[in-house]
Image (cartoon, rainbow, N blue to C red; front, side, top):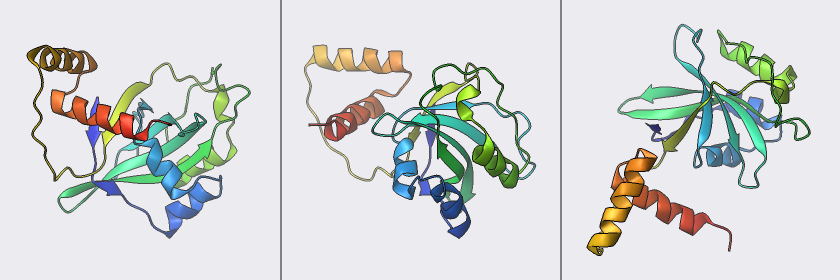
Length: 177
């Protein structure tokens, strides 16, 4: 599954909530450049839908984040509500069901106090985010065999082939040297 967003919605409130757990805005934003495990939240708040997710930093450290997708004009922005690192020692074995939240305050309180490594992630769905606007194009010539292979691989990944090519290029550029 792929969600599309145009950027992030930051203000003094959510910067402070996320920053007190040692995560910078850029670290949180970078979580959305890689696949996230999104957990369903049937009892979301009344005004807007909340999401709970587990992602990994570029160094592989697991992070729990609560966020919403907020429309602003013609754009959709990701608004982080709260985020924190998960404890390494027990992050592989999770048992408890993650609760639902009715407000930002409830989500932040949970993230502040809970040992997130004890929670079950079996209901999570892997999601990719498309963040930046794509306003430049290229013309690319491929052999028929490579073109067919790319289209097949993109279909297996559940992505349009042009997005698949773009993601492959982004991964190649961002890969450690």
